[in-house]
Length: 191
Image (cartoon, rainbow, N blue to C red; front, top):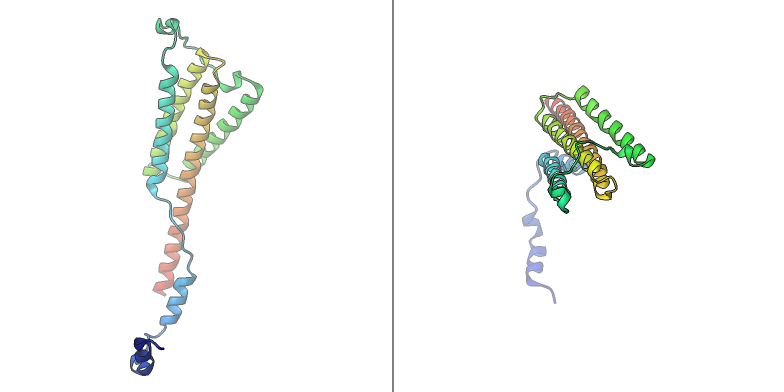
């Protein structure tokens, strides 16, 4: 048994097919389907990630600096600093790698993008804040030379700086590519 609605539609199919699509409709539709669909990262995403990491580092510093013993309460901390290279030869290599990588990325940013750009300037402020946190971690390492937590926080600090710089550079390069594509499309449309 056939559905009455389906039967009605089949009987009057010619009455419904009386309109033709606009010229070149199919070509435009096919072009839209062929275009790449890319998901653009949110510009605020990098800043949210950076702020989260900075907060995490600040909290870990605060927790690691809490006095645990009466001698610490009396203020016997030293001002000397130790860096990762002072921990072991393995950590010396780690510090050398990250320090060079961060320096290269910052130099690349300053050479290829305007420091006046809002995103670049914000990123450099965050990197400077992380560098200040790193100096605090060096002081903490001098106070607790055998603390694995401080060493891990120092490595994480370098990783965070490198990740932030990589994200920013990728975002800026994506924006440059998008701008180029937009200009190309505008030129094609005007022709």
